[in-house]
Image (cartoon, rainbow, N blue to C red; front, side):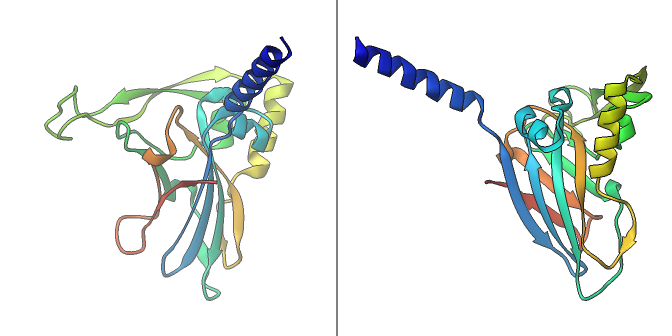
Length: 199
């Protein structure tokens, strides 16, 4: 009886550990102007650990460090970042904190571009992009506090020759780390593409 109880207790502990598993990956890249280090938080529990909210389970959060090389001044623009998944070609750019939660929060649906399955344009399955946005009111005190946290932690947009740190919020969910690619910059030799390894 004692042995049976121990087996059940061990099984329960393993199940709890599995359900509490955090999905976090990291990557590093560079170009001629800067070094980029990114930690990606994929699951709601990890996102909640990072910012105090799981953002409804609809966001992947990137913790970014940008380090300019040789004292160069660079311009940080959050729209220079893009997160793409091999799973279905979905691509996302970062949301501003006011778009996630705030007095006028954007609720963005997703739509497939280029037609149906088997699109000629994309060879097989057409990628998904952000679709029409609907504004909803989100002006409760809790929402205001969360918007402040997101704003305080977001990657600043500025010109700098010093290292810069901050978070990026991508509207994407239920992804596997192996499918994700984060890109920084325009196409060309100065573009940085990152693939992530589990921490």
